[in-house]
Each structure stands twice: as C-alpha cells, then as structure tokens.
Image (cartoon, rainbow, N blue to C red; front, side, top):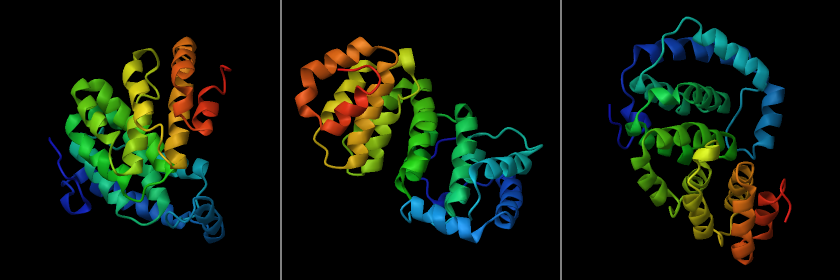
Length: 240
C-alpha cells in the first residue's frame, strides 16, 4: 500500500484499528488524573491537553489494550496512528508512537508521508524525537531511496521536519552515513532555533559513541560554524 498526503480525512479502513481504538479510549479515559494532567500539560509547554496518566501506568494499560491483537500491516499502522492523532489528549499520541516503534519494520517506504504528517502535526520533542529515531530511521534504513526525502527535509521550512532529518540516523551506529550526517549539520549550523541547535549536537554526540575521532576531526575543521550549544552537546562525552 502506498500512502500519499495522509491526513485524518484519509484514514484507511482497518478492523484492527476499530478494535484497538474501541479498547483504548475507555481504558485511558478511566485512568485519567485531572490534577496530574494539569502538571503534565504545563511541563510540555501546553502543546496538548493530557489525561494525566503516568508513563508506567499508560504502558501497562497499552499492553492490556493490545492483548490478543494480531500483527498489523501498513494500513493498520496508518489507521491506528492517524486515529490516535485525531484525539486531543497527548497520551493517545504516545500510544501511537509506541505502537509504530514496535511495528515500524512492517511498514514500507509508502509510510513515510504518514510520519511526515505526525512529526509536523501537534509537534513537540516528546513525539518527534521517537518518531525520527525509531520510525523514520527504520524506514530509511530499509529503503535507501528514502534518503532523497531526508535530503529534502533537512532544508524544509518546518523545523520539526528538519529535526527529524538530523535525528533519523540516531540509532544506526556503524551504519551511519557520516558524510550525510556532517553535511546535514553544516546545512543547519546557523539555524536560530534551540531545537535544531540541540539536535545537531545530539546527533553528533550519538555518532561519537561509534567514531569519536571522526566527530572530533569534523568539529576541529568546522567548529566556528556551530552554536556553542551544538558543540557542547557534541563533545559532552568525548571532550574537545
């Protein structure tokens, strides 16, 4: 299945999604804590309302919701993700992210537009970073032709698409395309936004766990082009 321009108005039919959402919404709603919800919403800078379910309890509920359900295909993943994203409370978005992390390998390259929708709709680091590293990264690793999309995202006008491109190789370790990583960092080295500067440093720091010499050499050449935040993050565990 190829998904293009995925939006909540283009959710594929999925019996599995019907089952999951019918279990999920009452289970999560019943577990909500209004007082905790206020604190969680404040911590996340009011990006979305919350039900007030702490992460361990939410994931325990999720296991109950998913008990006995079959493995999804790409259409099921699309339907579950988009239907969860259409719900206002952030915990439903977290459920979708966790579900996609678990089943990303069951989706093909046609799922990338869905991830684009998710990282640019109600965006914040709490969902974007996991989608970038564990869903987009999985898709691109499986289909190298998708690097062309990352090459487009790195200069996108949406900062969360840019952040996703920077972070999509985060879990690749020895498979990291260092040339592409360094090029992406240079392309956005002058970006004024905290989240991009932080992502540059994080991406370099993570690759430094695999090849610290390459990161040191890169920054020795290019350090002056980066914000101090990016450099500090990049060198946090390997030193100057």
